[in-house]
Each structure stands twice: as C-alpha cells, then as structure tokens.
Image (tube, rainbow, N blue to C red):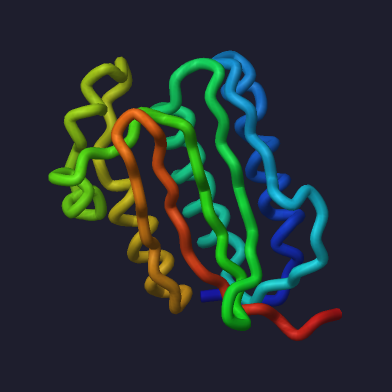
Length: 157
C-alpha cells in the first residue's frame, strides 16, 4: 500500500471524466455530489481509483439509457462515506449475497456482449479491505444499486 493524503474530489472527478464518452453514448449522467468539496482522505490513490473505475464501469453496463450514476460523498462519523449510486437494473435479493465471490456472474450479465471474468467486485472488496474499509451494497430490482465504502479523513491541509 502506498497511502497518502489527497483531495478525494479531484479523484472522483478524474475517474468520472474517464467514463464521460461511454456514459454519453448511453445518455447516462455521471455526477459528483457535492460538485466541490475540500475533503482530503488518507488512502492508496491507485487502489482506490481501481475500485471506483470498476464500480462505475459496472454501473454503466447495468444502467439503461437515460439513467444516472451519482458519486456521492457524505461526512459520516469522522469518516467520508462514498456512495456509487445508479438507476440501473438492480440485483436480486438471492444474488446479492454472492456478488463479491470470485467468478460469480449475476444472471443479469447475459445481455452483455462482452464476456466478463466476474472478478471485478471480488477484487474491489479485497482492495477496500486492504484500505481498512468495507465495500457494502444495497440494491432494488428495477430501481438501481448503491455500492458504498468509508475512507479515513486526512488531516486538513
């Protein structure tokens, strides 16, 4: 781990920008909420970027046209909670227990033409554990999914 203090807002905007074109093609809005904030976190920026990239890629893949993806940041018990919320197809209750298992593929992945190894969420879960956080998920079929984790606030600059 290469932990350092960095502005979380910049990272969220950078990662969102990477997906702008892909999201635009599906008419999906990606927003960072709030748009500007001054929070610094203490974490491994590379590993956190990988988690965010994976979660946003999944959100785009499972969100129909005209949907939205929000990267929301909330101060919560001296930590920053990051929510990656989409208006996608959601995950069924019986499958949600397995989505973090390596190679598990939810039944909703069949509509996708690309083949996915099913490792993304398992890797995200492991990376967040390394960062002393837990990757949690809430979902409703037909309404969307929210992945969330907490980060340690860095001493302000």
